Length: 331
Image (tube, rainbow, N blue to C red):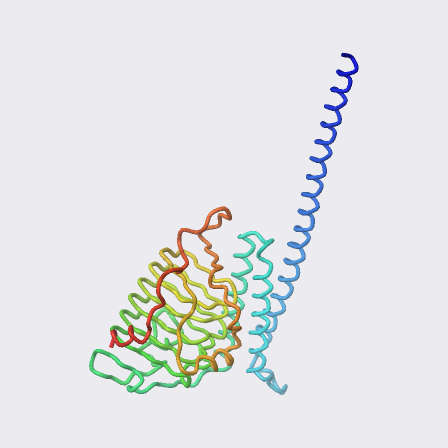
């Protein structure tokens, strides 16, 4: 009996030692992982911050009043800055797996600010020529009128620029490649409109739209929408940001991570707009047609990693819309 008891005690001691050693090994491995992760976060913060600072300096150091010094090639200069911002966006997107939601949002806000500053500097130093589109490219249910782009009466009082399209109702509006390629297209205060942008814009912004359809060719940089209600969108872009909107169906191609904030009742599917020059516009825009992150959406109002956001869903079993039929019905 004494020998059996001794063996039993030794067995329990050995088991306890093994359990303790396993626990220590697990804790050590966990600390090592946390250390590696923290090193990765620290390196990212330092690298991202330095590169963002360099971009900001490039934007701030461009001046037209450069004395007798030759002016830089502004077109190439701003194109290079845009490329740097795009590279930073890709760096952020590829690092999201080990960054906190707060850090992702902070860095994204920084990128948004750089993009805005770059666009404003481009518009200030390289003002666009004003242009118009003829009545034959604008189909409306009301008596036909000649619509002009960038006219003073189209401007919004709170803005210091003129909207490309503004204050329209019940209109079919078609802008062709000549009117949108490389341009910053802005749309505001539209209701029950069917808008088509056939070309490769530099950026697109739409604000205050209700019961509208917007079909857009590949956008080189960013698409931004706010105050949208009961709208359908088809957009291909590098960055997509939507704010303060509800009941929106969007068919999306986005090479970075799409962002929504203060949005609800969003349905998201794969981009499916088509027109004759779409392939050429993809090539000119620089978008990678084979890379689409439309299923990866960051909802800044839903930061729980354990449950999906209730504010958006994927369109899986819904039939793709027939844009030609919808266009005919509208007209």
